[in-house]
Length: 419
Image (tube, rainbow, N blue to C red):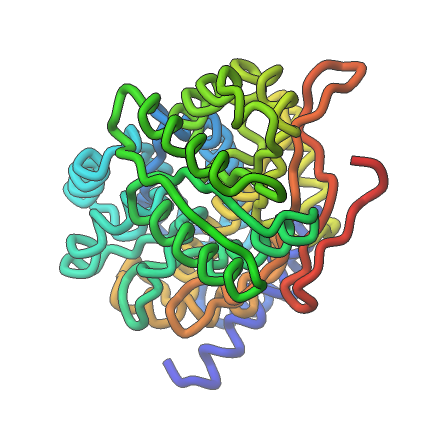
């Protein structure tokens, strides 16, 4: 396929994707399909798309939303394929990684044995790091919707990520904390690829802004974090005035930290901040919501897709199906499935060596529920802004609300009315 033909086909498919999501207006695509010999009578080829999700464990409430989004994506993609006369139909194969590195690897190996050449996920950077060698060596394309560790940004591999790395999120957190008047930050963070990477990036940026940082590392597999929380309290006590607390944790470990902090005479009086590991967490809201509110609502940063008509329609459909709004990573998962499927359609076969070559072009021209998905030279989402979420008490009970936005372009936080 020549570069000119490839670009023309990408433009054709992506341009008509918008119509597919709004109401299946395919006239021009069907004309192009007829010219390439696609007919309704041809043999249908079923393509398995894997999904690696931690349906059990510290990110389970996020994973369940992601699974719903992926199921919706496969349904929409197959409707698109049928209406355009495509020979491909897609099937979702879901595996539970339990947020365990070794389980994630075994689940990817299981998917590979079932003929999977493209997998969406895993969600955690520690899992992505654990499966990377197997994916690269076996030419299995992995598209993570939420892995953000900067250390995994490697060019020319089989790993893609539809989210900016924590080199950007760290700037959002540092600016947020500094703008709220704090010059010192006591941090407790997960001892995994994600936690260590985000802590180091935050520390570097916060100190560039003139702040002071000291952190406490904890084992993600530890059953008791009381010792680490005491160390955090000692740091905060030493720092004194103008001290904020930053928690870089997932749901389950975060709940334990919050419960312990709420009983601590120092930590319970400080304002706490969180990250994408806690923003919009259903578990934190339901199980330690009262404690979170007392700690200031846990202002948490999270990548935020720009609003667009496709996103608004998707959110309505998702809420009707799931009973709650989708989070940003659910939107990313939905778009990841579309990019994978469109790439297969473009090359005309389920061949990962060919798909990996066109996927960045497809992502560049695609525009979905999470907005544009342009990737950088490492195969990661090139940019994006961040929402500042806060758990607040409302007439309907506790709810996560967006109270501010962080702009990457201007390195600034803008508040949205009353917090």
